[in-house]
Image (cartoon, rainbow, N blue to C red; front, side):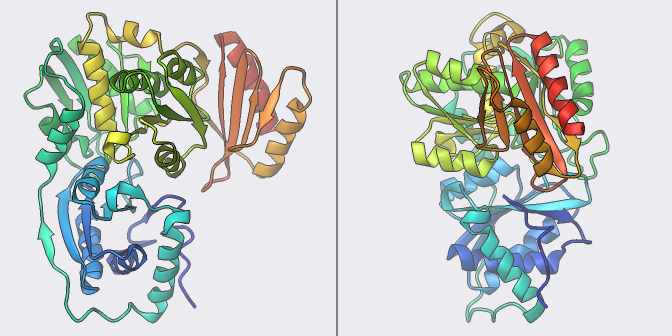
Length: 454
């Protein structure tokens, strides 16, 4: 009987515990399947700092090379550095990382040439099917001629490319605290920031996939406490935190207060629209703040709303030719970066915007942060479908209230909105609410939570 990889192959990537759920022998099969599904004659691979990453990455490369495919190994890198290599070299790519998950996890983020995503509908289901079959029957016979494995350092080129997209040479001097969370930001930041008018205060730049200081997930408030404290102690202009594979960035202002990712989305959108003459499309998912589409329209752009998740954002980016896309999870996507997400480029935009004027970051982002938001609140439920139906029943038919089911259930009124959507991988419902003032938001949030938690 074929192996069951349903717990390992997720909607957008491969992710699981090593060696309990997968190991180097499975990674090798993934390498074979990846080149079969993409039809590639050459690929690029990279990996993060987790203890299991070099071995898994090399096993994947071995599997690909056995099929006659040439592999360029860029070694230690951030996920967006792998996307850079896929785009610049025009090769399908595989990044070995489990992002912000605990140390015992690892995973693979795969893309086609030009950093185009590989998700369930774009090859991942097929890759899973092949690996399941081969885990029982064995891999296909190797090619007559084995492919080559070549090492290449892309960090300098990656940094230069990002800096070509945002001009930081004439900004005022800034003091910035960066918390890399012992993740790949510690590898990329020194090169990207080198020579800029920045005083860098590094925190946890030592690459350590056991995450000795805190989880590398800056969306959890517990994981930015050290950064907030250090920003205040240093009298810094801002703080930036990266997740484990450094494809997401989270920003705190000069007081150490978190800046909403929606405000960052609106800020970067306004800059990208200005760079393109006040014309263009900007993608935002349905849990970003009302501020985002408002700012996009005010700056001459066209906002387009999409489901949550990078495969949906990237598909909309490609389909609409959008300049930029942002998610409330602090993923930021750029047309000039092959429609892929890069937290580093978003960070450079924030630094350029702050350094291009005299005021503090709190004042700069206030114009983009206009409403009261709940943040994402997760609730464990026995029956996601029944709870969603109960919420729909409670609000359906109410005067001045609109419902839509693009992704879970979104309920909107003149002064507030909320979205409840099920997790794809856990028995959770995720609530996001927003209103024109804090009291209204709290009232709506609590009403919906009462129904969810029944």
